[in-house]
Length: 313
Image 1: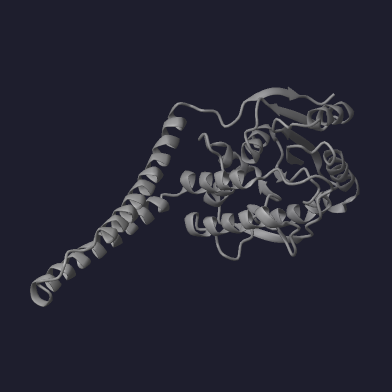
Image 2 (image 1 turned 30 degrees about the vertical axis):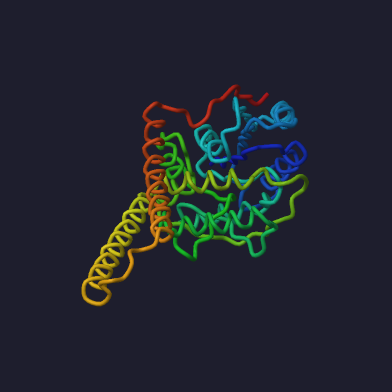
């Protein structure tokens, strides 16, 4: 039996070695994992620091490590897809490179899979995230509930494990904008949570900016749901109905009650045009986003480009 650990890496030269050491120590000491061999796949998402050098050093030292280097920054979910395509384990565990996801509690995720789950996500009783990252996580969770049908009780995080057949289903996705959480949700409903401790970052700050979080959020609902288009249609119908009722009100009011009243003022007309025009442009932009992503996918835009695969020594 083989366990595959996948770690997307970005600006983690100061933390990555400690995370790998913790995985190796766990595999050598945890009785529940004694029957398993393991491999670790490190994906360098074009880090601006010396992360690639750290990965090369680890691959030279340890025979169960493989490094993958991207040509440019493709994002965490593209890195996960690259790792899943490289992994050969019976169960695959994905975790972060900053030490916040406790590698020494991976046995809990494995046990949940052995108990019958298809996928398991770590749930944190207290998260060490603040500001933009906390707001982004909240918006992302809200989006998944509304757009992807995620159960409200289910907590989704970057620390998760799946069975190999779920990984195979995820790898079938060939679109240019992968969103692994959405792929897991559409592959199975047999998903559970296990409680783990969320740590402080070992060093540095999160690589996620508000721009990246919004892009990830947009990838999620445009790739796996047409609900935004349906919402736009509903809003259009409500506005049209409201406009019809208001027009009827004006005509009836003018004919039967105030035949000598002045016409609607220019300010009201301008306000109505701006509101309606803004909504129309917003909805056209949403439709254009869907069409543009379809066009990019049809042109076989890659999820990622691997510059080099660093084999174990």
